[in-house]
Length: 282
Image (cartoon, rainbow, N blue to C red; front, side):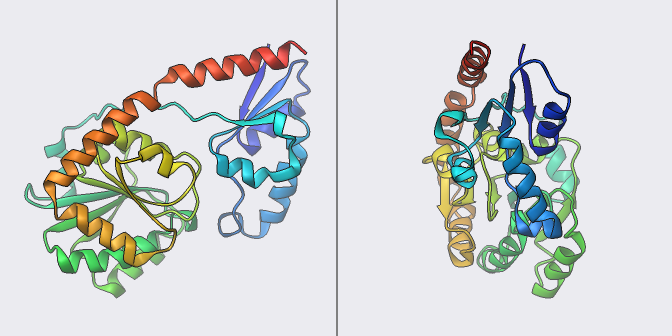
């Protein structure tokens, strides 16, 4: 028997239950000052103590391994890319776009993200001002909710992009909005291996993303990568895809092909099963 926990809270629940079996911990994210606030230092301490209490650690990206640093011996942690089952929309494209107020001839850019500092949506809003000026028929929609909602609403109004940029709130099934998009965008400051990228790839949607986590390795030629915080580059790449339907179709199909190969459950299941065997054979 093996107990497998995901994340800091679940990890502590696992080790405090005093299991008579090995504990494997998967780390999906790290503690960020701008997200954890005053509790960041305590949470980092809890992370490091937890690392010493589990038998093996699985990280979803090399960036997480770098964050862990010398707190964990190299033979106790490894990267296993998460699997993502093929996303299945519940509503068709026309219905979703109609509900969002998007016309058939408007190019839709979608970001599916929690409204918190990690996602750097202010960067996207500032970049969008340039995109909208160049492409008046382009529309951007952010699907998600979070503590920065009021601040972002205010920023949209102050920058005068309210006619083309919408904070749509949470969705019961964000795959629907991703499937209805022409382009998917990720403006984050930090990520591991974000599920939204895997889903967008498998849906055949081109992706414009900041250089975070394993996203560059994930999308390959299935999109474009810009440096974190680079407003000009983000605007340029979004404009490039918004203005070229053939490019969107071609790059989207590259992403779909990559996603089909990379995100099957087989590789993840096989490697995690091997880890279980390793920790139980000691």
